[in-house]
Image 1 (cartoon, one colour):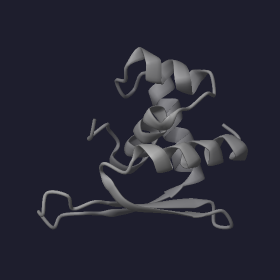
Image 2 (spheres, rainbow, N blue to C red):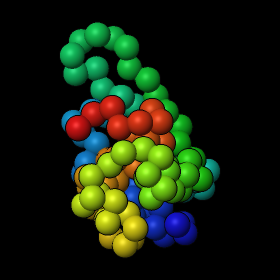
Image 3 (cartoon, rainbow, N blue to C red):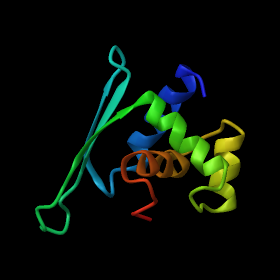
Image 4 (cartoon, one colour):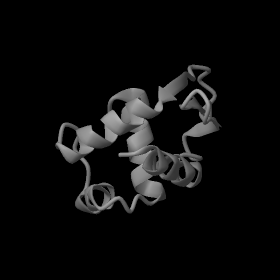
Length: 103
């Protein structure tokens, strides 16, 4: 996944992660994507993740290699470099949490 593809994932994630993330900030110079988990249930246990572009690449590769279970449509989207908001959401979750925590 080249830098343009990573930016495409980040752009699509802006549409896909809003149900579990309260904010997301891109720093193209540092090549990071900072995502803060939302406190939508009032538990007060949110985390902020500074995800490098490399971490997003690794997460996508984990999904492609079936290291993290994912449905066929999401997998096809990632493999074909046609990442939609749902696939981008899953990539960001795997990069942040090491698993798909929200669905």
